[in-house]
Image 1 (spheres, helix red, strand yellow):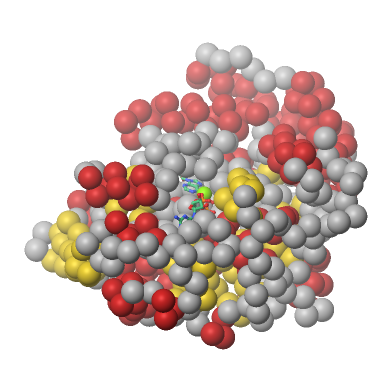
Image 2 (image 1 turned 180 degrees about the vertical axis):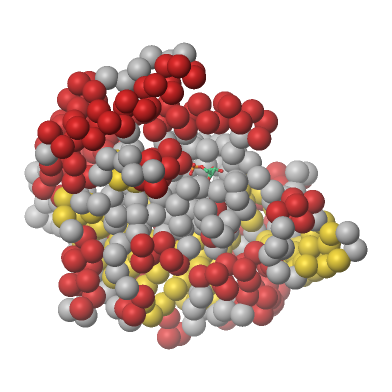
Length: 449
Ligand code: GDP
Ligand code: IMO
Ligand code: MG
């Protein structure tokens, strides 16, 4: 089982951080392959909570090599800030490796992210304003600066000059804004370069060597299937490929090593930002899901939109990603309801769609077709084995398996490591430890900050 992938099966925030942290215990390397600091992954270890944006969630373990792959867009200031925060909590980032080919988020990318949203008016996407879209656009436009450019000031400056020639012209002439300065950005990024240089590597080779040597590598997805630029609810998507293909383009590793592809889905649905969401509940059901699930964005603090589980989308995520297993999170949140609804189709102009519709108008305007399942109305947040789950919760899990065609391997009933049920014996690890994160005892000189 050398290569395991963890992917979001919905619109992000499914609990990938928790599941990555759980699985990292048995891994040698954890690799981020897409997105940037638009991601917010929460890991709870004992009484400690970590909110990671660029840093792979495996960083909390002593034995893990944490890798930022080439498909990630890196804001160096944010990354160094995370390293400093971790160091202040006694966690070293010395194992971190950053791909030399990853693209850098530049100050003007963040400016263009804001401008883009303003100019879209009521059609805006509700981005995280982290400059993610413009950075990926620059990459596709062959105007991007890469992590390796930090290692040579002359090359960095030359590339920046050519990018700013175009960017400043637009900023000044079209939007009446102040131009960005080559000197200021170069000086700022060369400061970052000094601290990041020891971490920059050919990570494609590094991961290949790990896999080839029998090492266990976990690929940690960011965002989710419905936010994928190709397979998501375009244009209300992010600008990267959070689906399975992104693992390969975003790391430079071939598919032959991947044995397990785990899709993480909440037992209901949430979405931050704008865009269609057929099962959204703008009523007391949505409010209750939001308050019980504490549904506020990890990165932006925005209130997440909430609704019932959409099994059509889950089956779609299973198909697009070739999921081999599901991690079903936040099942505990559903304990508040006596009846549970699940969407099994979309109705539009007299036709029922059981698959993700081929035209976006259908998805925007359809009415969800619901099936009802009984609730269990008891606290399940301390349940750790399948036998102790109420019969109605078993039914819900069986429904998820039947609807998606994929076995549920992990059931999460709370944010902590211990609040986990390994639904299938063969998937279970020997032990799950509660308590402080596993950390190097010999670490006393933080390398950051
Ligand atoms: P990610 O982006 O997919 O890593 O997810 P986030 O960290 O943004 O959001 C998931 C939130 O749900 C975090 O606050 C987690 O601590 C929390 N969480 C994860 N699993 C569970 C669970 O099973 N039950 C409850 N109640 N909370 C959970
Ligand atoms: P994690 O990894 C939830 C959403 C934004 C917006 C859209 C585009 O924590 O699951 P962007 O800034 O990427 O250009 O915004 O994508 N979005 C996320 N929603 N979780 C995320 O990451 C997200 N990353 C981006 O809210 O709707
Ligand atoms: Mg998140």
